[in-house]
Image (cartoon, rainbow, N blue to C red; front, side):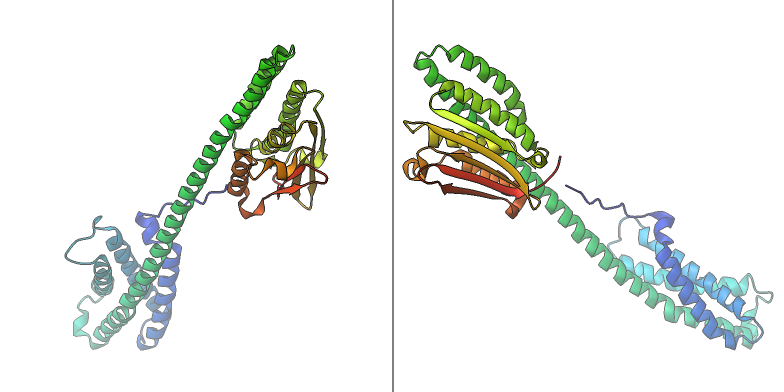
Length: 357
């Protein structure tokens, strides 16, 4: 599963001079300078625009400074108030700096033309600067709300994923003893009957369990691995009742690498033996077929046992557990179907989308 990671929020100058902020300040300052340039008859337009850019950068610096300082928002005033007031103060201070420090005639208030220029630049800055700051604050709040909502959604998704993983592990833990106890019960019947093959069957069972049990803890396996376990299990059951059970295995080459939950096929086969073949006096036949069609994997286990009517509604906890595991892994895109066969027997079929390992 792909995981979305929220990038860390920028701090310091990276936050204060983000490219969007710089672009907005550049455009607003250039427009303001061009609008004011006709009133500055002794100054070229590019110098007026340059001064407005200087004022805009000062306002941007004040906005970013009070955005991060103080680190903890004071209780007596909201941070956004500090930012807006800081922008207004920075505009006045920047214009004063231009007229007191960079102006060849620092006593500008005695010159009506220069005083009018000072007032025009200050007034235009105070007219647009704080409102731009307020608009930026609204956008910032909206972005923060969306970021928080995304963080909550990611956290919720992560919790849901962990809950599904826990549920899947719990179901697999239920499958393990169910499968092992049923298999051991079959061996016990063989031992109680005094069969000379009991020791051979027990050796086969031990070898089989050594290969099978580690895979029960895996989150997923492949159809090819499942078929290997099914073959070993059916050979073991055939040794227990050689005259009462026959089986065939058929698998498309395209299906071998398809991923599926552990013991998917094994559960169907074990259920067919326990509820179909074992209760039948004549025994029966089990046919396992796995194929891929239209990007879906279809696995069938057919038996000629006693059938649904004789078995009743209790077809075993294994199928119920398998159905839930399929829903967890594939959602609503997986199906488990059970149908009667004529003249007797059961067909169990699982159908799920193809996922390659």
